Image 1: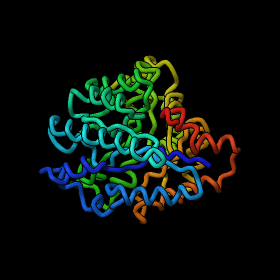
Image 2: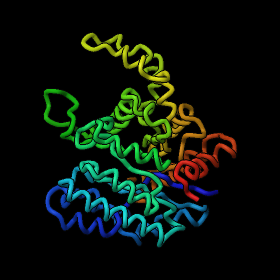
Image 3: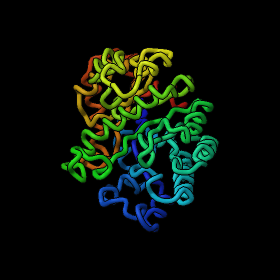
Image 4: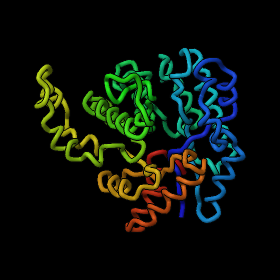
Length: 338
């Protein structure tokens, strides 16, 4: 069986070295990243991929790990990081095509030149863009980011949404100064993704750019489980709000809100959860879900989530046609991977 692992992370050597040599946030990328050799050591990463190439035609579409580039410095500094990252990704795909079948470009989203870097990355061979669910606290539907989405749509390239939030960004209780117990990650990241999806829907961006394709990481986050709220709940948009007239928003959309959420793509990176996988598959269907593992953030620091995700999918009854779509054909179609 062929597997295209469409969403997992790696730092090319040039970018990794530049970040560690820089001052400020770029230098302090955290002990968690430094403790995972598979995210920056190419030999370790190739060894991990080879574990799954023994029995299957397995390859990865790679993208940068956290943190978002735009959080690492001034626009000028981040432009350098983005160029190093995208050049390094393109080189890895050229050098190791059997291991890395494509890459998602990262952009200096805090720069007015972000769309230009997208153009450059597509010329390098990028299969899509990785964009985080907020840009240093800004929503994705802010007009200054529209050129990025417009550029992706023009080139027929998808945008993969990656959640982003830290303990200090949004507290769980208004009288506290930070989120505790990593609630910001466990529950905060799915909320981040879901909120970003909603902003793309209700801002009308999906009507403005009908060719735009967006994948929501981690099987569409909260949306499949909250289908009733997304559907009948948002059909009543404005009923719970007295200080704004949201009926105008509904009137301005070309479709029911629920239908827009069905237009997103999603991936199987749910850390080996069978119930979550079944829920996501039921919501998005066999044509909108791509195999992905989110490697190398498992407890084994590389192969764990790949193996677990494969095992979960194998345990779910589905037709051979559906299995092939999820494992590799949907990625081929969405990302243009051969």
